Length: 221
Image 1 (tube, helix red, strand yellow):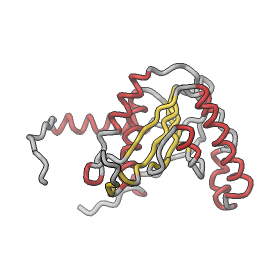
Image 2 (cartoon, one colour; image 1 turned 90 degrees about the horizontal axis):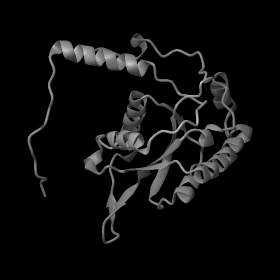
Image 3 (cartoon, one colour; image 1 turned 90 degrees about the vertical axis):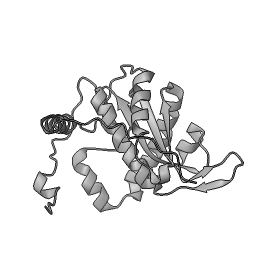
Image 4 (cartoon, one colour; image 1 turned 45 degrees about the vertical axis):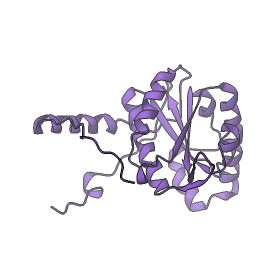
C-alpha cells in the first residue's frame, strides 16, 4: 500500500550562507578526535537523548529504522561491560589478532585495558536489528541493515561532537556479551559500543594526520 505523502519542509539558504555553513561545519568536524582518556564529569541524559534522536533521523532501507541505542549510565552495568570487554580484548591481543593487525594498531598505543568504559559517564551500545517482529511475533525482513546503522552511527558521533562531547568507537569482538548485559533479544546484533563524555583534562591523542583532499575525492565534473 502506498504511504501517505506530505509537502517537504525544506529550509533553503543563499549560496553564500550555504558555503559558510558548509565551511564552518567542516572546521568543527575537523577538530573531532577519538579520545581514550575521559573525565567522569556528568553529562545530562537530555543531551544524550537529543543526540541519539538526531541519529535516528538517518535514512534507512525501506524506512525500517533497524537500530536500537542502549544508553548506559549505571555504574554497575558499566563495570560488567568493562570486565566482559577486557576479557575479549586480552584474547585479541594475546593471539586472536594477526601480527599485521597488531602492527597497524601499535602507533595508536592501544591495549587490552579499557578504563574509559567505567570512567566515561555514558556508554551507548548500538544494536542492528537483523529483522523486525510484528505484533503477532511474525518476522519482517529488514533491508540494508549494516548500511543504515552505520549512517545513523555517523550522525550520532557528529551530533555528540557538535554538542561538545568526545567519543570513542569501541568494538570488542565478539560482542555477544552486550546482548546479555543490556537485555537485548537474539535478533539484535551489537555493532559498536560508543563511549561519550568530556575528555579528561590531561587527555592526549596520537599525532596523526587525515588524508589530504586529493587522496579522498575523485572529481568527475
